[in-house]
Image (cartoon, rainbow, N blue to C red; front, side, top):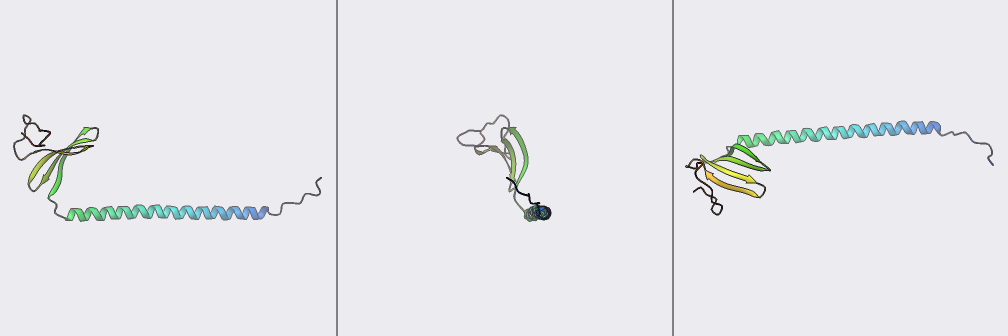
Length: 118
């Protein structure tokens, strides 16, 4: 038994609520964009600042060449104090193969127990 149905008078308030919530969502979205852009700019600045500090130092250690062997294995030629070393980098660690300034050619092989050229 329905008496007279009362008209919905809150319809304009609902529209006002919707525009307010959309405005709030847009403001939050703009804030998030500023946070992301600011974080990106800060990270780039720190990275550039760090690379400048590293380049200004005179480091005696440098990687001269790399050769990928596959499955996360690499051969590296590393220079330190005017000497060059051949290193094997693999998932279980790094292995010294030989000094390249000395004679270490194809005929020589690496002993697994001593990690030195023979």
